[in-house]
Image (cartoon, rainbow, N blue to C red; front, top):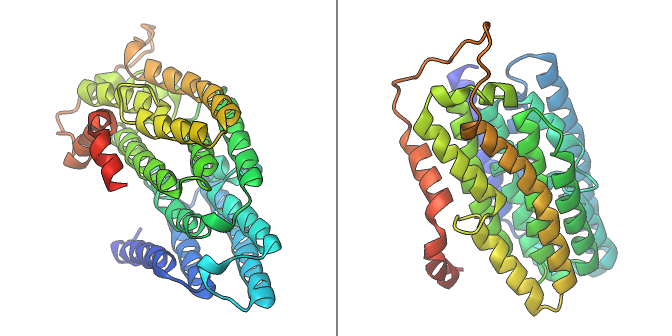
Length: 346
C-alpha cells in the first residue's frame, strides 16, 4: 500500500477514536465510529485476496448495522427525554438497543460471528488494530452509559461470551481465529463487571491490549499464521518464542503473571456484589480458554518438529528483537507485583 495512503488511514483511525472518546453528544460519538469503520476497511482489504475482500465486506455490513442501532437508540432516548447527552441515556428501550449495538461492534455473543472471519481474512497488523484499538471507542461508550444499562442482560451476554469464546477456540488451527475467540472470552470478563465497577473493565481492557499487542507483534516477527508453522518457528528466534510462551500463559490468566490481576480483581468484586455463582461460572469457563492457550504455548516452545525426510528447519535470524516487543512482553509477564500501585491509580 502507498505510504501516504497508509498514513491517511492511520490518522483517520486516531481521529475517529479521539472524537468518540472525547464527545458528550451522541451524534459526535456516532461520527467518530463511522470514521473509524471507513478508515479500517482499506487496511483489511489491502492484500486484494478474496478472503480479505470478504472480510472487509463482512466488517462493513456488521459495523454499519451497529452504527445504525447506536443512532436509533440515541434518537429514541432524545425523543422520550429531550437529552442528547451520552451520560443521560435513561430510557429502558434505548438502553437495550444500545447494549445490542455495542455488543455487535465489539463482537460479544450472540453478535460474534463476524469477528473470527474478519480477523482470519486480515493481515496480522490489521488484526492487531481490530482486536485492540477498534474496541476502545465502543468500550468508552459502555463506560459512559454503564449506570443506565441492564445488569441481567450484560451478565448473560458476558457468561455466554466466556463460554462460546473458550468452546469454539478449542478445535481451531488458525492462530488468528484462536486469538479472535480469545478476544471474545476476554470481552465476557469485561462485560460482567461493567455495571458494578466500570474502572475494572477499563483496567482489564488496557492489560488485554498490552498482552495481545505483544502476541501479535511476536507472531508478525516470526511470520506465523498456523499451528503447523508455529511448531517449527522456535528455531528462528528461541528467546522471542520463550517470551511468547509466557505472554500466552499471561493471557490465559495464570497466577504469577500479569493476566491474573484483572481476573482476580473481577472475581473479588463480583463476590462483594453477592454474585458468587456468576464468578464461579465465569472462572470455570475460563478453563476452556486455558486449554487452547496451553496448546499454543506447547506448540510455541515445547514440541520438537517431526524429523521426516522432507522437513526443512527454519534459519535462525540474527535480526534483533524490536524494543516495543521487549517492553510489551516484559509488562505482560511481570506486572503482578505492581498491583497495589495499579489499584491506587485505578
